[in-house]
Length: 158
Length: 421
Ligand SMILES: Cc1cc2nc3c(=O)[nH]c(=O)nc-3n(C[C@H](O)[C@H](O)[C@H](O)COP(=O)(O)OP(=O)(O)OC[C@H]3O[C@@H](n4cnc5c(N)ncnc54)[C@H](O)[C@@H]3O)c2cc1C
Ligand code: SF4
Image 1: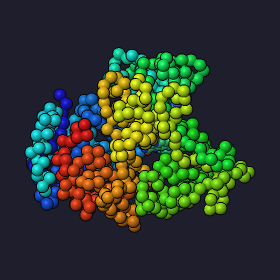
Image 2 (image 1 turned 60 degrees about the vertical axis):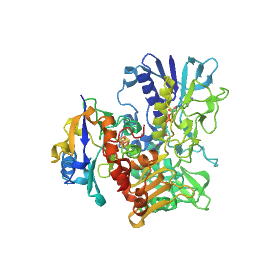
Image 3 (image 1 turned 180 degrees about the vertical axis):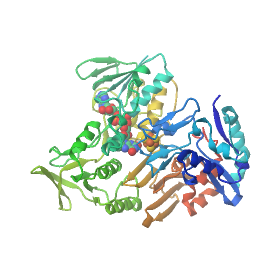
Image 4 (image 1 turned 120 degrees about the vertical axis):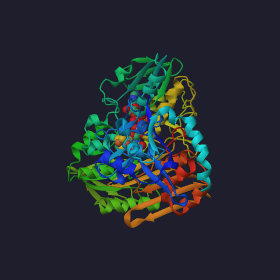
């Protein structure tokens, strides 16, 4: 059974432990600006929304890559950037309609969430359970839609 | 079922793989006329400054990728298509039959009508063969004149600058990338290039090129004459359609298709730079000649060839460019629409720029300079046609809040797969 990151923004307190854990795992530095998961703050509502790649099945980034530098990991379901194959053309960063593939101007490669190879550090670091790593059918579409419907009014009227 | 694909670029390769998956029992043949294994033109700039070797340009990295997936790759040039007999004529006279045909022959660089264009030392930068020639001739310190500062020209510019050549760029338009960026952004890119030591002549054309000893003399419309060791021409592209003469397949700028990427002949489809496909933003049919569109087309055309009925909602025209460290993007109707509102953030000293274009309540186009984080969400906002509601006013005040606007409007909250389905 594939697992997926489940995000429950209503539980997020904006403590940024996930960003620190992610940047340390991925880059060896505690530097939120290098994190693959980002917390967006809605000041007006005092709300925090953790946001990262959902490893979507359309995989726009993977299909747009001209050199096969983004590959499917069939064990984790993640779409992973192979940094040594990536030429840094950035086409994936404009093709991902969720804005979850970014370009690293220091290393000159694209980067995105790779689920840490199957043990995501963000989920381990989150003290409130806002980010959990669960069986993929838990995050299934019906559930997502129900969730979206539940919270849609909040966002629209914010 | 015999599927035949003409052209082994990204559109053709993605189509072949999609056909293999959707139609496991069928035969899939990929016919390409270049000598190399299927490769990506887009990777050429990175080959030019030695970031990768030739194999780094290959579309698929496993040498047996195609044979392992039951895709037969044939090296031949198709010279004619007979739709009645369902046969292709190959160079050398051989024939090849098909049940369903995909035309994915890409495009070629146009040759500007300038006296002297056939002199030695003048190249396009379109094929790996061109790349090898340029690498041989344009070394550190060589004087290089680049004709054309369009999208492809600017990508080559970066690679040439990295090679350490002495570079001058000539562009007919009044700014750089005139078909991708407005006056402000295109002007800033020009200024940036000049501060990096590249000569940029806009609103200027090359009148003629003459031989002068071992070098070339490039005469400009401003009467200036430049000495050059190498001239590179990047003045636009045209779809490869010649071999379709007499086939009855309707063409315009590219092969004319419907929203299933089917040509005027029901068993013939088209994809990529050769295809005049639907533009998401305008609803009109045009040749976009960009990689993401070739990938979209390849997948959708193949699905329809395999008997599924998949509509192409249109590709968003989008580009990203790195001009010696200054990263720019443009999306959709970046120039705006009549009566539409727009939001702009300018920080010219720091080479930062963001412009958003709205039509009524949604985003229809954007341009950015210096934005590398979450930039793809501009595509998401445009292509989902999400109603911005109150977020529009917020974006009008502060266009940098695009990611929040997306989250606020779609409530994607990380569970965003399927929103474009
Ligand atoms: C230097 C450079 C940089 C680029 N950078 C970018 C970029 O950053 N972003 C972006 O979006 N796009 C970029 N592009 C454009 C992108 O490469 C093209 O849009 C893409 O290659 C189109 O794919 P295609 O499969 O339609 O055509 P092609 O890649 O051109 O492939 C078509 C193939 O068909 C072959 N063929 C043609 N006629 C025949 C025939 N009669 N018989 C057999 N075979 C035939 C051709 O030789 C070719 O191999 C760049 C292009 C160049 C040259
Ligand atoms: S930036 Fe790298 S991973 Fe992204 S499309 Fe280009 S080569 Fe592929």
